[in-house]
Image 1 (cartoon, rainbow, N blue to C red):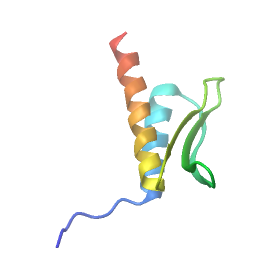
Image 2 (cartoon, rainbow, N blue to C red):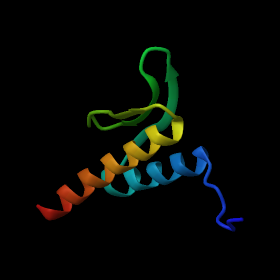
Image 3 (spheres, rainbow, N blue to C red):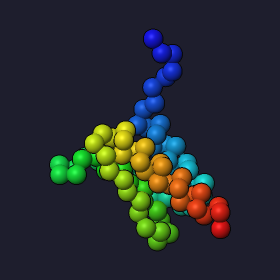
Length: 81
Protein backbone atom coordinates (compact mmCIF):
# COMPACT_ATOMS: atom_id res chain seq x y z
CA UNK A 1 0.00 0.00 0.00
CA UNK A 2 1.19 3.52 -0.77
CA UNK A 3 2.46 5.72 2.06
CA UNK A 4 1.87 8.91 0.07
CA UNK A 5 -0.70 11.08 1.88
CA UNK A 6 -3.72 12.12 -0.17
CA UNK A 7 -4.12 15.83 -0.84
CA UNK A 8 -7.43 17.39 0.01
CA UNK A 9 -9.27 20.00 -2.03
CA UNK A 10 -8.66 22.45 0.80
CA UNK A 11 -4.90 22.00 0.42
CA UNK A 12 -5.17 22.41 -3.35
CA UNK A 13 -7.21 25.61 -2.99
CA UNK A 14 -4.72 26.98 -0.44
CA UNK A 15 -1.79 26.25 -2.82
CA UNK A 16 -3.54 28.03 -5.73
CA UNK A 17 -4.41 30.96 -3.44
CA UNK A 18 -0.77 31.26 -2.32
CA UNK A 19 0.52 31.11 -5.92
CA UNK A 20 -1.91 33.83 -7.04
CA UNK A 21 -1.23 36.05 -4.04
CA UNK A 22 2.54 35.74 -4.46
CA UNK A 23 2.57 36.62 -8.15
CA UNK A 24 -0.52 38.77 -8.76
CA UNK A 25 -1.10 40.53 -5.44
CA UNK A 26 -4.54 40.93 -3.92
CA UNK A 27 -6.87 38.02 -4.49
CA UNK A 28 -10.50 37.88 -3.44
CA UNK A 29 -11.00 34.12 -3.35
CA UNK A 30 -10.28 30.73 -4.87
CA UNK A 31 -13.04 28.15 -4.77
CA UNK A 32 -14.99 25.42 -6.49
CA UNK A 33 -18.66 24.84 -7.17
CA UNK A 34 -20.80 22.33 -9.02
CA UNK A 35 -22.88 23.32 -12.04
CA UNK A 36 -25.46 20.86 -13.36
CA UNK A 37 -24.67 21.31 -17.07
CA UNK A 38 -20.92 21.95 -16.93
CA UNK A 39 -19.68 19.95 -13.95
CA UNK A 40 -17.17 21.22 -11.40
CA UNK A 41 -15.85 24.76 -11.84
CA UNK A 42 -12.75 26.10 -10.10
CA UNK A 43 -12.43 29.88 -9.98
CA UNK A 44 -9.84 32.41 -8.86
CA UNK A 45 -11.13 35.97 -8.49
CA UNK A 46 -8.80 38.95 -8.14
CA UNK A 47 -9.39 42.33 -6.47
CA UNK A 48 -7.52 44.66 -8.81
CA UNK A 49 -9.55 44.35 -12.02
CA UNK A 50 -7.60 41.37 -13.33
CA UNK A 51 -9.97 38.96 -15.04
CA UNK A 52 -11.22 35.91 -13.20
CA UNK A 53 -9.53 32.64 -14.00
CA UNK A 54 -11.74 29.56 -14.31
CA UNK A 55 -11.31 25.92 -15.18
CA UNK A 56 -13.84 23.10 -15.33
CA UNK A 57 -13.63 19.35 -14.99
CA UNK A 58 -15.62 16.21 -14.37
CA UNK A 59 -14.39 16.08 -10.77
CA UNK A 60 -13.49 18.80 -8.31
CA UNK A 61 -9.89 17.54 -8.21
CA UNK A 62 -9.59 17.74 -12.00
CA UNK A 63 -10.99 21.29 -12.05
CA UNK A 64 -8.53 22.44 -9.36
CA UNK A 65 -5.60 20.81 -11.16
CA UNK A 66 -6.54 22.54 -14.41
CA UNK A 67 -6.82 25.90 -12.63
CA UNK A 68 -3.41 25.46 -10.99
CA UNK A 69 -1.91 24.51 -14.36
CA UNK A 70 -3.45 27.61 -15.94
CA UNK A 71 -2.11 29.88 -13.18
CA UNK A 72 1.38 28.37 -13.56
CA UNK A 73 1.29 28.92 -17.36
CA UNK A 74 0.46 32.60 -16.84
CA UNK A 75 3.21 32.96 -14.24
CA UNK A 76 5.76 31.31 -16.55
CA UNK A 77 4.71 33.53 -19.46
CA UNK A 78 4.98 36.62 -17.24
CA UNK A 79 8.46 35.60 -16.03
CA UNK A 80 9.74 35.20 -19.62
CA UNK A 81 8.95 38.82 -20.49
